[in-house]
Length: 251
Image (cartoon, rainbow, N blue to C red; front, side, top):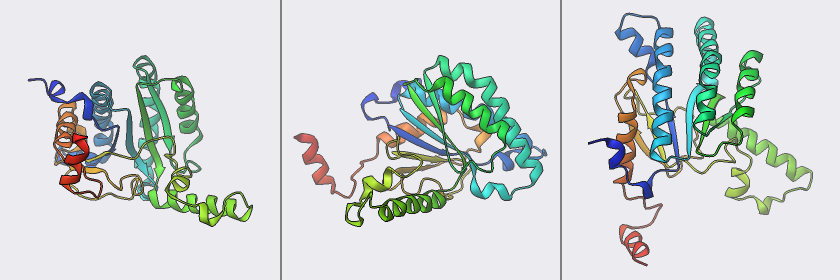
C-alpha cells in the first residue's frame, strides 16, 4: 500500500524540521570524498520537499549549514556554497510551480554575495506561494539566534519600547528568526546520531523527535512518510495526563 495513503490528513504535523546528516559517512562508505556525499544529498532534499508538500505539511525547515560548519575545510565550504547556488537555479521554477515559498534563517553576514543574491532572487520569486513554506537554515545556530533576540529586546527596553514586565514567550518568539513560523511539531535527524546540534532549541520545546539510521543521501519520500505515520501514533500531551487528553477530546 502507498504510505502516503496511510497518513491521516487531520493530524499531520504543521511544521517539520530536518537535520540532514550523513553525507560524509555515505561518501566514505563508497570510497569517495565528502563532497561526493553533499552532491548526492541534493536528491534527498528534493524528495523531502515533495513528500512534505504531498502529505500536507505547511512548514519544512532544513538545517543546511550551521554556524559551526564554517570551521570545516575551505574546499568543502566552497563546494557546499557552489552546490547551493546551482541547486537554487535548478529548483526555482519547480518551487514556484508547486506553490512553495522559500525563506532563509540565520546569520548571513559570512555568506558569499553570489549565494545571497541567488537566495534573494528565489525568495522574491516565490514570496506569494502558500502550499508550503520551505525554510533553509544557513549559517544558523540556535544559541546565536537566542542571544540576538535577547540583545534586540534589551535595546527596546532601554528605549522604553518594551517593559521588563511585558516580556513573555510571545515577545521572545517575535524576536527569533522563525517568528513567522509555528513551533516545530516533528524533528527528523538522519544517520543514527541522536543530537539536536544547536538547531531550533526554543522552537522544538514540545516537538516529537524521530531518529533514523538512514544516511541523508539515501533518505526518500518513504522515510519521510514513515516519520509522519509514527508521529500520528504518538499521544501528544503537552504536560497534561492521558486522562486529561481523552476528556478534552470527548468534549
